[in-house]
Structures are given as structure tokens and as C-alpha cells.
Image (cartoon, one colour):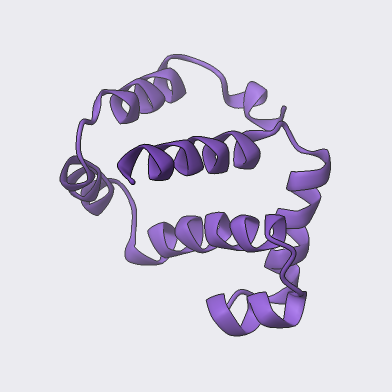
Length: 102
């Protein structure tokens, strides 16, 4: 894992803080202060690209729908295929919570 190189008190603190948030509004508040609008948009875009790749969308459709570059789409796809499984974990959890909301 690439983040293992950064593992330590500061990164643990960041992740613990995120895990302590209860609501979407809490997340909006933290990320408003924590990151730039472009950084937050980039993270959200990558997760949406991952979702669309998992659904079988083509690069062209993903590019049109998200505005992501083919380089970003390729990077996300590489992470889906060879990464640590974080996208799959997050998308599965989102899918489970969507089913629970129905």
C-alpha cells in the first residue's frame, strides 16, 4: 500500500476524525475546512468513475458523464484492478446503505 509510507499519528488522526463524523453535514463542514473545492471535487469524481467502471460503462460514457480525463479513468481502473480494494469496499458499503434506505 502506498499510504503505508505515510502511516503515522497525523494520518491516523485524519482517518479517526472522518470516522467520528455522523452526518453528511458534518462531512461538508470538515471537508470545507480541510480541502480545496477542487480537491474535494477530484475525490468525488474518482469515486463516481469507479462506480461507473464497475457498472461496465465505457471510457467515453464515463468521460462524458463525469468530465474525468482518460488518464484519471485509467488510474481509477488500475486501482480497481490492482489496488488495495478501497474503491470496492466503499462502493459495496454505499450499495448496502442504499438498499437499507429503500
